[in-house]
Amino acid sequence: METNKKAENFEGRLLDLQSNMMNFALTLTTNKEEAKDLLQETTLRALDNKDKYYENVNFKGWVFTIMHNIFVNNYRRIVRTQTVVDQTENLYHLSLPQDSGFDTPEGAYTIAEITKAINSFTDEYKVPFSMHVSGYKYEEIAQTLSLPIGTVKSRIFFARKRLQERLKDYKYQDRE
Image (cartoon, rainbow, N blue to C red; front, side):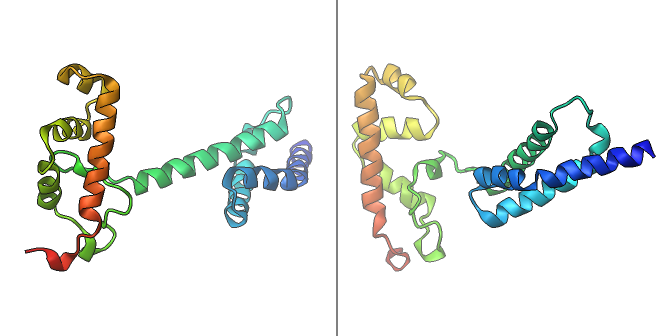
């Protein structure tokens, strides 16, 4: 009888928190449908784990922690599934702009085309840009090339801009 009453009390408290939970879910997701899903998942998880709740623990804090953890885990799962690992030889894809044309087959650039565009730069731009794309930090590039860090940053910036300009109007039909 005591256990039954405890379960009813737990479920009642959980039901009383639903509007607060929905508000918290909305602040996390900023989307009403996703917030409803998060609320439902949190409620189910709390019910599944009610034996792990201790009476002297802040109930609202316990439930909100469950919700936050579910949200973070879902976010990490989404990021993991959407992460693209650049396995090209010189990591050229990392420095391309979002509208680089990789979205459509007719707009996609080959590595040879990108390399050709980069190799057309003078060494003062090509070397720092290539080092940056290869993973060197600005400080390392500046030290290696005996240049001020500001010069390195501006050369990489201008090389990136030149690359974007050279490749922005490139069309599939123009390839040989």
